Length: 410
Image (cartoon, rainbow, N blue to C red):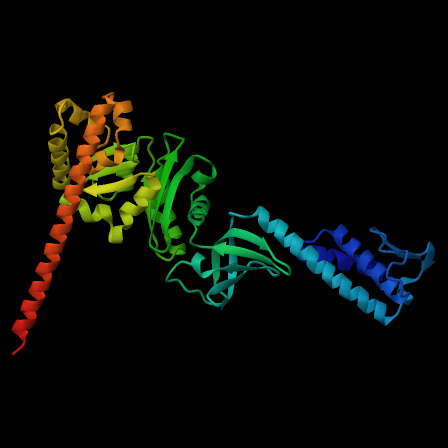
């Protein structure tokens, strides 16, 4: 019996990942509860000890040794219930402790079922993870028994269970997949410097190399695209753009907007805005489907990116030039300084305000105030003109519809 007790404790400790000492302590407490139940002494002076090496059990009541095996069926049932409760509590503590340390890791699990949109994943024999609908890649469905990889996003402890929250949409999931597929990232030769993702559609990853002999983009793509292909397949076909990181914001913005070719980039540090000029044939590429390319590039670089055609850019410069020339005390060099500051339209000048003009361009506060006031007035005029043009276009479209309907009627 004693050796069998030791084997049982060993098996429970191994299967449920619970410390053996905690199981022995639980057993002792359960036996104390059983003895108190037997003697009808809820606060009785009872002590139980289990020898950790031999499994021998010794029990004392008021310093008098008793035989714990002679207590009867009801105390034994009490001991069983107490033991089950304590083991479950220990198991919850063990699971919480283990998976709290593993937050941010990728794990493999088996799909069990869906519950109200939440995907239940069996992580191991005893533990289930929960993937809420918002953490599932849109358009992907999983069958029971299917093996999937997930990110441990969070671990929450409730009254009766530990909830392990899983994710496949979090940007960190992409980072961990690259670490698994690209050894150079795990070895710190290549670093993922920035990452932007719209789960299920597209991801942009900016990478840099600490070794001049290692091409970060080529290493991430792999021979004939083998490495990136594995990641794309794991994500169900999500498009991934590998971007070469650069310390220069202008170069980084240009890289982030690829495959579109950029003609010119003007940075306005005061507004955190990058104005990018692209040719007409590159405009749709730069913006992307539903604005996805420019949106992800903005998140990747940290700049608010504005895409313009050469005509739009030149028109903004002309309007700015006319506005500045209309203010007394200005000259051509001031326009060049404004453009160098990243101000390329009257809207930009209105947004920047007078303070940066005084501190950066070293012009007087009185002149800077008049410049901003003129830009604000011009911006309002352009806004009103835009509204009138929009109303005229709507009226023209409505007129065409009415004319077409009248021609159809007999």
